[in-house]
Image (cartoon, rainbow, N blue to C red; front, top):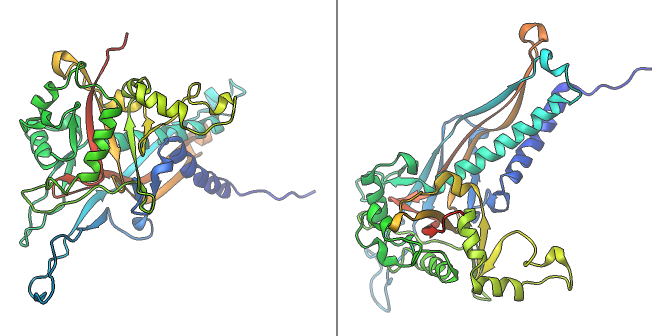
Length: 389
């Protein structure tokens, strides 16, 4: 009896669709990713359907000034509507595995499905790590145009940046970078000096520190102009808001060591154990017993362990304290541009089909949103963390 056979090409297409969804979900970032400009991590697929290597994420500057009153003349007193953008350059990202028959015949494990699982895991870890590195990147301001508006910024990985680049970045982001528990720690305008002002005595994270970060986020670009040399100011918009109720929400991404400090803060412990809803007697819903996000005054505190492994500044603080980076984020903090969604490739022909392989590929770029040398959607925090014992 003849049976209907599913074409291999269809199987690959179905798995590619699942792969894209699953690797984004497993990265831990999916709740905060979306194509809307209100998302913390903003996605753009424009280049999927057209040629090009650059995705531009635009920003229209907020209108400021007093306007005119009464019989005052508006003509000639209008303000320019400032425009800027973050540029994301896409590049090919590929990974693959070889599955020679000389190996696969020795095991009962389905090596093709195992390869799919591991390639998906690799993709999720790469997306997560690149997003973390983008959050910590140092912004190099673009050149001003003839109208005095900032050109497109460029960004340098923190580990590759120079002392001069870090100092310039600090000057342009004085209202959205916090060292320890006092804004005065940045007074010198020198990045290395500011790091030295943070120690485990006065520079550890706490409920008060989280409150400070949120206050700074809500006032950034207002009381202290950002990128003052360009005159282009931006504010940080909350991730979610309910203006009727007067509520604004931000998300604070931290590594495990800072999360451990915050999870033991008496104020945060009291709020999370006494105020969060849960079923009576239910272990699964009780914050005392379960891992997961902490919440405090409209801030979701999310643990991302890899922030420590990628960004921990070992011995860089006062008295050789270890320093941890954290990122309080609002809308459009990170931009991700796609030129091609994830595709699955299989190579079954090599060496007379004796050495087949499987690969994934995508065309993607990622960058921290910035305009005029100032990061747009986040406050960067650097705090001291206790030594691991």
